[in-house]
Image 1 (cartoon, rainbow, N blue to C red):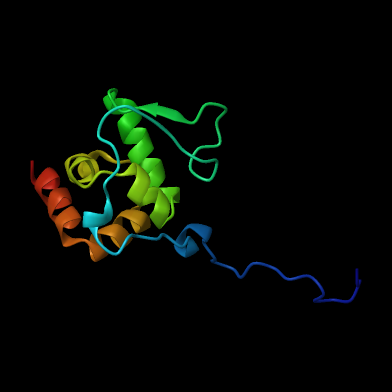
Image 2 (cartoon, helix red, strand yellow):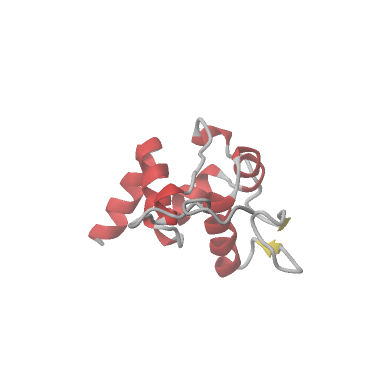
Length: 121
């Protein structure tokens, strides 16, 4: 390692990591054909716990799964785990970072419409 001044890179002042997370979306919500019932197990990039299984019969667990998959999943995960009609129904209740929600809603106006309906209620 060099001891020269400037040898170490620093994070620029005002840099916010959350502003740079690359959220991905599928091309269409029609691709989302995951199960609406049963047990789902996800990979460690979505859930790092020792038991990353979700019982879709339990609303709280389904919300956790959908939130984590939208936020941290990749398109193959979205296709395998998320179900279009369930996503539309659960969308207003998902726990998502604001920027993540904005990325998905800008891509899919039907999700934005669900948020507006829930916000007006």
